Image (cartoon, rainbow, N blue to C red; front, side, top):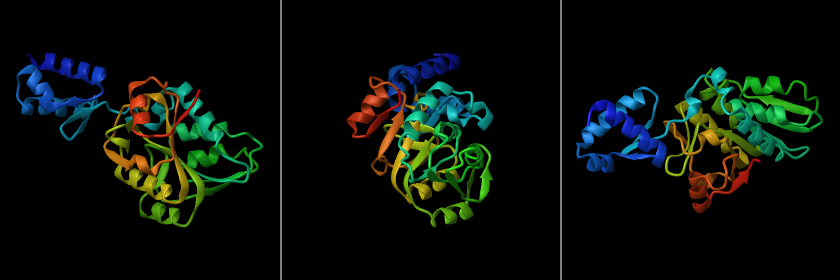
Length: 252
């Protein structure tokens, strides 16, 4: 099999199976594992898969820049945002992550909502300027432009001085095996710091992120209270998550 044919075959497997196990593909094709791993390195270099130990997973579409991501799955993000906004009780305190889905959550808040929002995202803060009863508490630090959030030591230290009823967590990928992931190590650390300051953590996961993975794990499944998604209940990944005991909050 030529290199181009192997490439097409690997991409087809990734689309159909949701993952690639290098040793299995090598046995199926009668080639060495080193050849498969080399092909996967090439595909990962082009942003077409996320390499993991022993193989590869579908890459998250959230690796694109912030402006581009605002145009990805807007309907799904609005559904997730509407369901997430409904969790906020009058007088409550919520930590709201950054990113395009979190921005949709801020825009879904009723104009007369009374609550406190803690965020490390300047775009979230600006989106809430026209909500007169929402108190906004900003956490400062180095600006991570990919997701328009602050991170780093100063931001993590600031996070340690707040607390909230729950945290609405944005991630790049949601996968039964890889877990909840994002593409930057400092961003992942900041998300963990925020989750540690909330009584509950709910994950914002529009359907295009379901079954995909990024490089850095954020939290194990047992540390979240629920996953808010517009992916259908019969989606194979959603079914596996439910079987694994993940509490799913449908966003219709």
